[in-house]
Length: 72
Image (cartoon, rainbow, N blue to C red; front, side):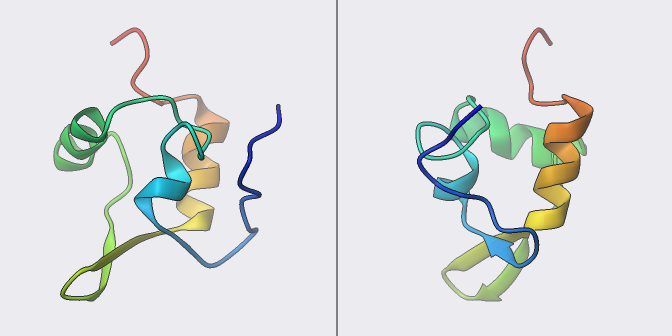
């Protein structure tokens, strides 16, 4: 499967790099944030007042487990 954005092995990802169409997870922002709140998706890190990121390793693990919100 190929995506316009090549996910790094390590480092940080912004939400635009995680969710479709640029990222590999085809869900809406509201579904993503609901999943973060209830623990289905990884918790973010705050790098600043307006900068929220996720560890690339956490997103890779999420994709590997297939838990992306579909069929729930």
